Amino acid sequence: RRCCCSRSAGARAAARAARRLLGSPDLNAFLPRKRNAPFVRLFLGNEVDVVSPRQDARLKLKEEYNQYRNWTTVLYIAFPAVLVSLQMSGAVSRFALGLLTTLYHAWLLHFYSALALRESVLLSNGSHIRAWWIRHHFFFIGLSLVMLTCSYASEPCRAFMQRFNVWACFQGLIMLLQNRYQRQRTYTRIALGRDGSMDVVAADGSGMRGQVLLLIPVLWALQGWELWLGVSLLRDQLLAAFAANAAGATLGEQLAALFSHPDEGVGSSAASIVPGSGQLWLCGVLLSVIAVGNLHTTTVTLVNKFAARRERRPASIARDLQSLAAKDD
Image 1: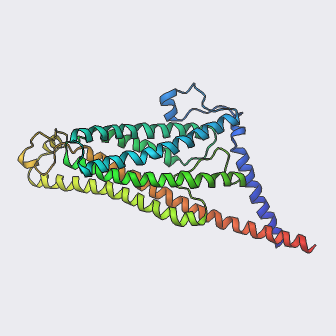
Image 2: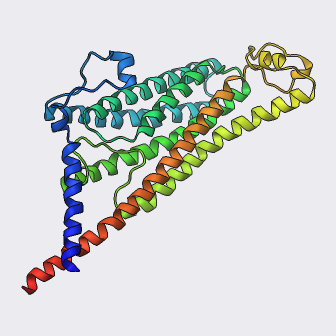
């Protein structure tokens, strides 16, 4: 029995080593070139080869990505924190707040576009990144574009932006913790042979058992908060639409009120709809989709992590039995 257990454990270890070897960037460099990812083709086309044949160049790509995440996370926290403090203190005019908010949303658009492009290039160079997190960046690019078109003169838009800014501050703090602690854990896993040399910190990953118990509940809470932001937006817009429909407003009148300027008046039948709040529909849908995807991916990652830990346990027991048998001999 000990012999069979040892052989099966050795076979599993050999299979894992073979999978790591076949997925190694060193071999990928000599395979036929694949088409660039769609987001890379959008900016660079398909004729530009983003796969580097040299390992040191690929590691520089990874290091540049890590450095970019580190310094932009500070901005991710500071930008919304300044906006929230200015809005609560009333120290600046509404025009200045609207201008700063527009700059923040433009920076968010740049931030998620850069992340999506960098991670697509890393993926082509052998990094293992879950497909959802790149799609997550695409959804946030769309959300940033929609928020750029929101009118700061609209009261519902201002209220949503303030709630979003508070959530973004906490999101940035979680990103800061992930960048600091999980990066060290990633280096350890690479040294142990459990991760590839091009693997990066995952948005849903965690390290040791203590980090799982601390980080995963915080991630779930943050993603639940994000889902509440999206659902509450949709709820408010649906209630206003039902009230306008009960008052006899036609679909055309409701759409005209949603996308009219906040200073323009609306018909009495559509009075329940706040002028200029049409973009909040899209914001609610996008936030809800992002939150559901984040919750699903984080939960699946946690389940897979514990399943892999249970799978490794018999192998470690087999190694211990084999070492004891060798000592007895």
